[in-house]
Length: 157
Image 1: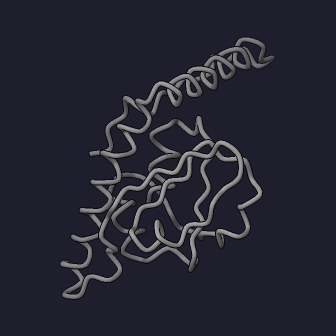
Image 2 (image 1 turned 180 degrees about the vertical axis):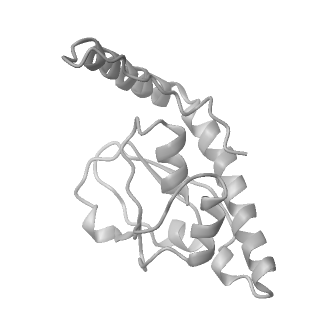
């Protein structure tokens, strides 16, 4: 869910990877919760963290306590950020109660993502991406104007 929100709210202006210590397919209730806000997670799957250890990251964000405790050290100047959320897949009860847990986590993640995207280094990166998009649009042979999109301003809920 965090990957989908980061992609959508950044206007796809930052590169996002999802990796875990026990990766797998996306939970069906996560797909439903994200569908409600227009983000399609079908076909998404996280990678094992070992697959991305050698990639250069500016930030590594963990979203559950188990992941924060087990997260390996990434090389370089990677900043680790931890957002503590309940594991909605661990919630027991009716389907509606379980879906409510996914919605709570989704809404909390959305708040954190919006705040994260307001950080100066992230804003600088997004501004650079939008500038490059504008240059590409101006240099386009099609004559169509490119849509400049700032996902930070877009509210999903």
